[in-house]
Image (tube, rainbow, N blue to C red; front, top):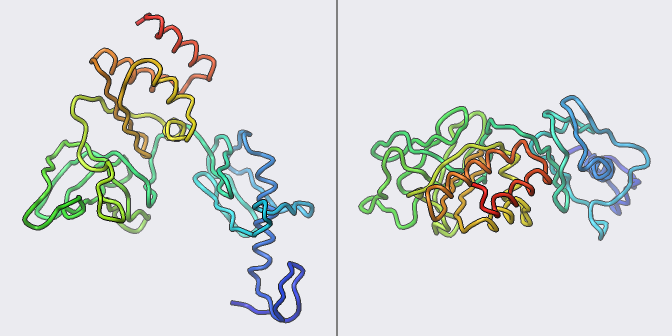
Length: 273
């Protein structure tokens, strides 16, 4: 850490201040610039720089917090670069990302994904999660699993799992338990349903706390949805015909505006299928 003598303009009370004070002010200024552009379409190569008049705090209390650059954004010093085309989104308090129609999945630690078991050996399963390489899953990474009590997992089974290792230099690793050792909904599933592939942007719309798309689907007929952050959605309804209708709707919603989707859903509610 580099120390400099004297009181900083950021208000440090110590006799010394470090260069992190400048980084904090930079994040605060960058935050206000990004807030003004939320909802706009950005293109690769666009960049955000800290302006001299951007002095809004990151939170209402004025407490400084580090700005979090999500998918589609990359930090480079005092600049924030856009690496993919799409709409700028914001999640309180300080996370920004680019929402796009990307279909290629890049594994990220902590995300819940739907995988297909492609191979099994004595101690690990190989799982296809749609990334550049298969992920590994230990047979002990299931609730209640021991050396004597192995999980009943077969090649071709669908799994809902969480990524615990995901970086460019290591093979992705999955678990089917949370921090307390409970399955919490993860594990083998998929009996009687249909697995489809959608864009990563549609997945985030489905997982939003107040998702209009999910509310519209629930009004059609009772159904079950399992959504993975890797762009895979498993759907099951009371009848095969209804399951196929839901699958076609989800795949069509990628290219529809909200009014177009609502008009289609009204026609379906009137029995036009």
